[in-house]
Length: 361
Figure (cartoon, rainbow, N blue to C red):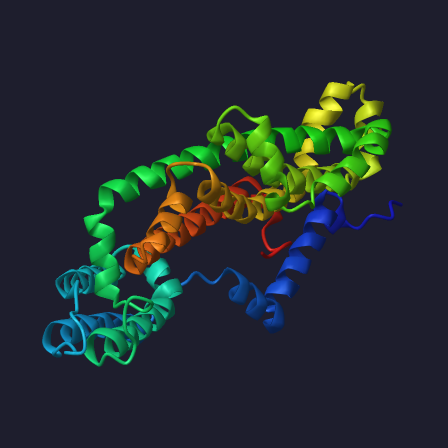
């Protein structure tokens, strides 16, 4: 007599495994702690209408204070009209996002995530306006009002736009050269033990040298200031890219190579299809580290030799004690640097979507 009961004779070979998986999933779903953790991790941002309304109201208050509160008589206040229209535009934009949050999920997520920031920014701007333009407690030129910074930046918009373009060109050239060379250096060091033997000391001793130490040599060795500045930015980018790429290549599990070689993979395949993809988290970390240092080097290079760019503009305006225009250029640099880092993180999250919730930075 068969040992298999009637209810088991028609069971498919994978039915036991499927039944076990279903039971396990049901047990997880029934666990309130597991459910709470999943909700916490994957809950989409939704707008808090009280916070959104507070943000809109505070920015409207900024516009009202700028327009209706009399300015101080201690000095000539400039740029109040520009500050008023800036606050009105910001209020209108936030209000449109708030109304749109009832229809568009993207608007709801964005406002849900950033409404506290816009509240804090409105409070800072309101206090700044009251302490400078309205009471004169803080005075120009060192602490100008928000409106004066906006007005000076707008009046100098053509030169600022040209400076931004030249800085971005210099930054793109330096990051491209330094990134490619750093990636190749790190890949070579991580893949070849002999290359690592010769290149490790060079990277460790040359890479950390401050940018200012290279300036006397670089501006003699290169034919013009632009190529010298590109070299300085490239050198700054090369070091973190080489170190993180090498660490990522060396950290790839040996089991991956053993399996691929067993299946007949070539060296080219092992480098391009195994090592580099596995090292991508480290490579993106290197890019994240390189961008801010590249901006620092860019500013230093432009103040010393290049005849255009945001660093040159800031140094020029500081020499003439035109602090409002200098602050406008600094604000532009902050926005550009933050935007580039945000874009880099967005690309990283897209490329490394499989790594979601494994690392957070």
